[in-house]
Image (cartoon, rainbow, N blue to C red; front, top):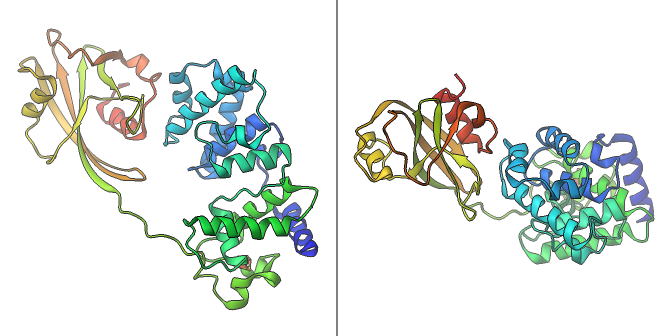
Length: 350
Ligand code: SF4
């Protein structure tokens, strides 16, 4: 095992990709990077990480920011609960731990949005704790290298993975580098479709390679198909202002702004009647201009949306829940990607 880990770490020193969060042991910065990378590829996440760290250099800077400001900085990354959890977590660290990031694994894992992988990654990268951080890349590598024939979603898989990798780590002085190395190996060599076994430093000791099972492992569970929903939006313009609603805390896209909308059975419904049902009154003072259809895919939902462009006269009274924003301030409110596309269609900034 000592020889295997040495080979792995030498490979890592020679071939790893340089990333700013690998150059620091500041737990706050590592936490930010790990949350960004939870559902985002490195290339897309990097500029967000740099902007985040630039604007909120310490955990207390983030704790004291407005949530809408944090969501705005996150705009375009999706999975907005990550940004809200970072903000909540920063407040906890600022208030409960006086701005000092906790070192104890049990306290780290209690932070909102932090699971076993993220708590382990922070413990290893920032505090050099003897833990194994098991993300998707490590699961794939471990299933093959250790030859684990259990579905990756089963607790027994995680248990075997951790046991096998902790045994490999042994009492090596650098759990930090070890964890970086197995994540990097999974991401760049032991890849999902065509693992590059010919370039792998651990080929000699890999069970899947010996048994020619690289493409059979890991065993993954069947994915549920995303649920289809149809949404109709109304981009309502009055003078130089646009009508928006803010989504509630418990919904997908929580707290983000969007054009007033509702779920429908059939997108081809006549728009005036639909608009009437939205505003619960007879809207004589509006003019329907046209529409555009959009498709948008979330992890559990496949959305078909139709956005109607509407001009409202000065006398049209907006429902109480709608807020008016002028074109200049539309750029400051946090919105999701589908809304960005609809704002482009509506010509918000023209
Ligand atoms: Fe993955 Fe191939 Fe290396 Fe085994 S030999 S760990 S399957 S890349």
